[in-house]
Image 1 (cartoon, one colour):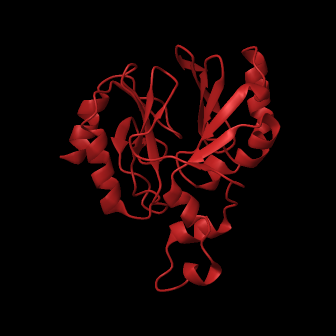
Image 2 (tube, rainbow, N blue to C red; image 1 turned 120 degrees about the horizontal axis):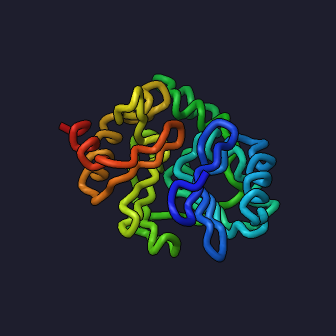
Image 3 (cartoon, rainbow, N blue to C red; image 1 turned 90 degrees about the vertical axis):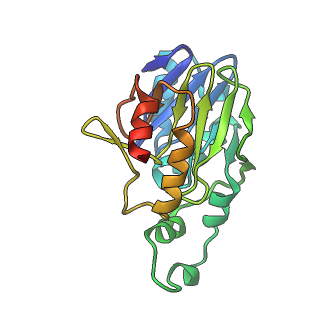
Length: 219
């Protein structure tokens, strides 16, 4: 569904993706493997085609966000963009998973197929969509988690660095988060942004009072 002018939330397998529909298409996250069928149907409903996608931005390297990257990138020829810290994490070797106390994040990374290649995204980079969509590195849920901030729209796409439980904005899931202390610091950065709207990967959008909600969470 359209969540703003030229900005669509598309429910793929396992997670919401966000589609920026301008002259070219930018897809933020790609769901689990097999999501391309759902994406094709949605694109057809708005008069577009998968070949219009020129970039796929990954908020982090969990399989419900990047599992569909391979098939969508092959079908579209789109560039894949991801923070290097998560690309590095996805190269983890078996013996590293179980060195010391096993961490859920390491196990997930070992079991996740990385994109064949990805261009790096760094904190402060700006994508030329929505009047400038700024990359904010928000480590914690994973080492390379990013959020995407639109100052002109006063919104932020947060991946899984935040949840919304029973309508209340909360910390990320403890089971699947690598470093909750780092996540708290990342959320504090988000609380400084001028925003009204938070777009979540697994929950309904928060359309007003976003900044106040983040500040309460950080208090």
